[in-house]
Image (tube, rainbow, N blue to C red; front, side):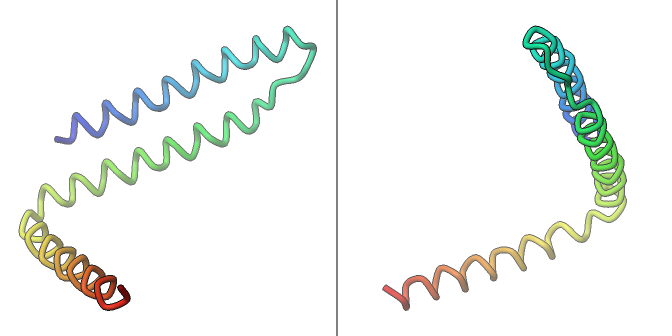
Length: 89
C-alpha cells in the first residue's frame, strides 16, 4: 500500500516537472518568461504533501484498529445528511 502512495506522488511530481519544462519552451517561443518560482512552489507543495501522506499511511498501517471506527463515523454522518435531505424535500 505504501509503495502505491509513493508511486502516485512520484508520478505526480514527475508530470509537474515535465509539464513545467514543456511550458517553459512554449513560453520561450512567444518571447515570454516562464514563472519558474511558481512551478518551484507547486513542486515544493507536492513534495510536502508526499511526505505527509507517506507518514499518514505508515501510521494507519501501524494502527489498523482506527479503520473500522472511522468507517462507522463516516456511515453515521452520511446517513444523517441523507436524512436531512429527505426532510427538506
